[in-house]
Length: 371
Image (cartoon, rainbow, N blue to C red; front, side):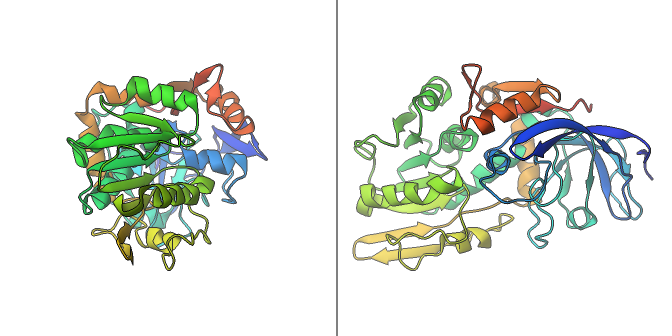
């Protein structure tokens, strides 16, 4: 059964080189095993920005993978979904590398999206509670990813969490750490800019410490068992890890990169540790996570990482976000229409800065109108 016709068009935000434009795309009814969905609201994540800037070679000309949508077409042979159902799509297929939403297949930055049969049959489409707001639903995937990372780091029983990265993921980790990792420990967010540090200082939970990555006293005064979560851009991951290894010495107990890693990313400070491989082993959020331990004299560092989570973890995150306090909505700093979005995307990507019109864009949410 399908309600989607093939003779209509929809709006899509399409990248043309390093610029974006709103264009019309033809609607396509879902084929056997497929679902057609209409995004409600979709957010711009750090990976999207890297793709739009040309820092990654992902081929999709339409990005976006964090958001809520409504089912508008059900292909033959699909069970468990009806037109009007509210859903979230897991962007990372653990067994099919040809489906990576917004990376190698068209993403959610458009009014209609056909979800491939392999993703539907693989369980990557999950129902969302109606009581979860469309704006907050754009946090479901990052919430689940950060919670998984914190759970992985918990095995090291740290007394301090140092977060490298002051974007959405880094600040979300600061919000979640007191609940899922350190109810009484120290949380430090490491920033690349004074604007980011100022934002975290105003919005992060009380007691969160902020520092610039150039601060020579960054690692002074931290505990004796430190976990490091790295949520930087791809090029910043290894430098952040190397800084922690040098600066913390035997106090460093665990490292977990969420941010991107180049396939050949290595550091001579952790000989024998293949960080991209261990992160890839945790694609889709398996539990317990795969880890590699670096041991040398007085040092023992557990290295993990992850890319994506399970559908069960996404659904759990959605349920928790329904009842979460309103403070988390501070992360959603800007909400714009489809027509307004390219101006923000171009400013962020061409200017290589999250400052637009004098304001820090922590998380841009694009309203596609589906209700």
